[in-house]
Image 1 (cartoon, helix red, strand yellow):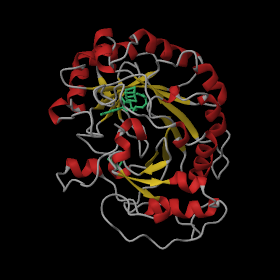
Image 2 (spheres, protein in one colour):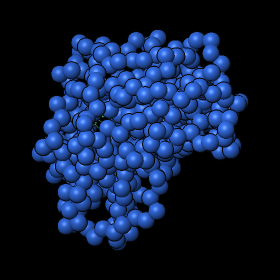
Image 3 (cartoon, helix red, strand yellow):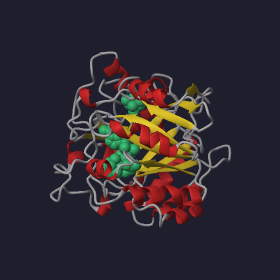
Image 4 (cartoon, protein in one colour):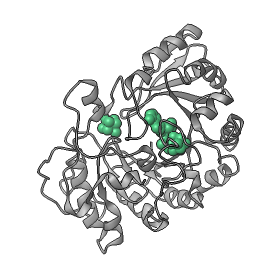
Length: 382
Ligand code: SAM
Ligand code: SF4
Ligand code: SF4
């Protein structure tokens, strides 16, 4: 079953409503060579949020079957992944990224599925690392991975220009880890990947741990102890209701406040000042200098207010929210004969019409967005 085929996709050319409300689009304007609006005003969506972060899913495949993301019952042998021809090529991803940098994007994150399953990923990293923002700076270039395949590949990725890395690891205990990842990969292999990333200087490294009630709660303290004083920032992620396949229930969520309470019983924690706007994680530091921990509380404390993220799916569709049901077909524009300026116009219109704030609406018990099937995280990336 190909989940993603069931989500509604709007051709970018049809210039769509963003989100679920039909809103009139602002009149299209022409763009100068760098794509900024002619009036010089910053590109903001309807909630005055800039576009800063592009998450690029390079494959919908994965070597893990985490129950909260790609449960094996759904992503078993009968699942049809995307055919190669539908995937954006590295050159198409590079062109799209170049256009987005001219619109204000400053961070490019490669994700998936498992991005290290895409062959020759270092070649894509090399192309993206050579791009420049309009002020001549390189973009922040980062990767999210389960790290099972990382150790042998990390030197090439670093040499190609990868700057940072986020590694997902839900437990230190091998049995808990295998139960959650549903793959024949030991924790030791992921830890080797982290060590290899440290060894080549991919700093700072972040480790993402999705906390599920009754599944890996007992790993909170062992994980904290393990990563203190290593320079690695452990981030606790609330289990989210993303997609349609994980059977999410609120009673499986461990609120970040509860994680903080448990950590506080073992360690003295202090606030971190000067958090950057748009940062997904709230951070605390160990008072003894052991480093920082992060909390991604998308369920109990929505951060839609400064969400500056856009997602580009493996097959070239744009999603303005993790919980979107509608994608916008950039691939058709890239493969058509449209000039950069035309595509830039459409991208600007798309962002200016953006209304998404799914998590905030859920948190405030506002009418939840309704509509088509929500897309899966393995398709648009985390
Ligand atoms: N395969 C790579 C990995 O696991 O790091 C990259 C893609 S994965 C979709 C990106 C991130 O999304 C991971 O850190 C994963 O833990 C997180 N994630 C996936 N499903 C989630 C869910 N239902 N709730 C919270 N986080 C989730
Ligand atoms: Fe694969 Fe990452 Fe999803 Fe786990 S969270 S199934 S590693 S894509
Ligand atoms: Fe951004 Fe959508 Fe998540 Fe809100 S729910 S933070 S708008 S991705």
